[in-house]
Figure 1 (cartoon, one colour):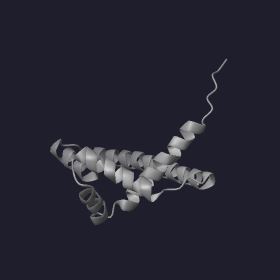
Figure 2 (tube, one colour):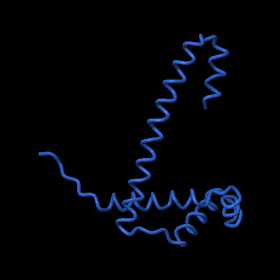
Figure 3 (tube, helix red, strand yellow):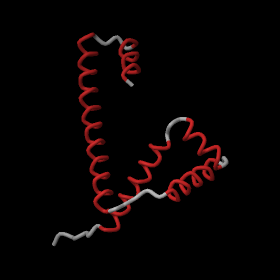
Length: 114
């Protein structure tokens, strides 16, 4: 992303000072978003642990099956893709986060202000 921004700055004739200011602002914004994302991931992980929310092999099977159906590919092709690209852990993390978010939605008690 940063390289794309640098190319744009070079083609649009920004000064070095403007480019550095943009990079600083971009970096600060990116760091803030990354920090918020990490905090959210940690919070969801703690909630899953506390509430005993577990990832089952059937959850992974069903997700890969759905991805295969959606992309009109075989189950083995999709599973092989995730394994070949070392993305199974990422997929498992996403499924567990979704299960945790579903738990939170189901457990939420919404009160209207009076």
